[in-house]
Image (tube, rainbow, N blue to C red; front, side, top):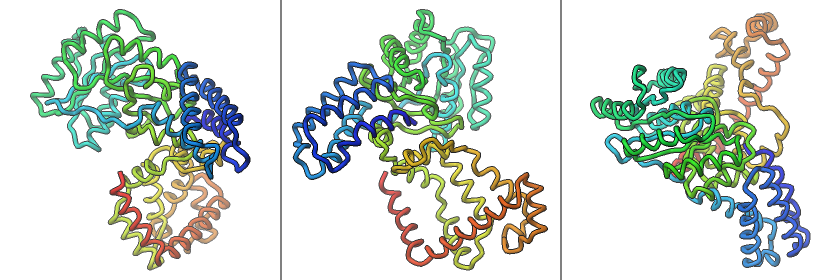
Length: 445
């Protein structure tokens, strides 16, 4: 996520991060490089120039040159200004209606239909809502089918009327169905086009006028850069939407859309899409994103994701097993599953301060655990619970069954043994302290 921008900003700020003499001249040179990095990320020239001018003004106003740690203070100023540029504070969505109606808008190919499903899944799983998806794309039959597939995948009902070509009538009928059947949120997926045109704008405006939604969200592909910002402006002029959804932030994103869009349309980014899976949706926190762009990681989001998968009862059971030397491969497999539920490995590593830079150039595959899972699944229940029983003939059988080699099995056993010893050592004070820390962090959202 924003790897190229992060690298260029790091280089730009490198001089100021050191302990050499900081002068007004090299501050100006540094900010010139910062502006260049922003322009390379497809940030609007005017916005990039205003950004660096504000940082310079604040830097000179706060006596950065004479401070004890000028480099760190300068990085903080850049981070604070980035946060402000992207919206300042996180903003939620309005769920006050009965039902709450959310209108989704955007161009074809932006990921609008998929994100409608992600949003429904988020509201169902995390907000305890009962959402209804409404298919209003009457031009592309595959869109209706796609929404039904998504609905089945997440266990959310989809309302559609294939014989009706009037999206306004379908949206009204969908809301009536929701009221009659106890749904408290309605998410309306509308048609998109390959480019902004008058017909599409009139249609979405008519739907908006007819249903008066609590929230109108504009979905945009973050990989389209400055074009995304221009499209957002065109939609906002017609709809006056409430917020922006940035999709495909897990791809080769330069970052221009995320940084520029709030400044151009004066509407907050509310959610971001970070992968293909239905749970790959995050609330957009400008400060956390600024920290990630500057290579500071995002520990708060990492802890929050861990908390969602953290089962205290399961953790206590595992602690007891470790204490009795009974921690086996079934327990290890369970831990792997919890990590996988937290999101893509590349995204998780990006949340660890410094990890993005350290792992630059490495291809972190989301299937990295696949061969480990295959090896464990090829073991008998007895072998999983007692790894010491894995002799040469058993290893040969497991290697054949998992499509791996005996060397890979030996490597896994060695790593498992080292991990077990480390966990055993933590059983004293360290393990208990970690449990206490996890508990304390639950109140730090």
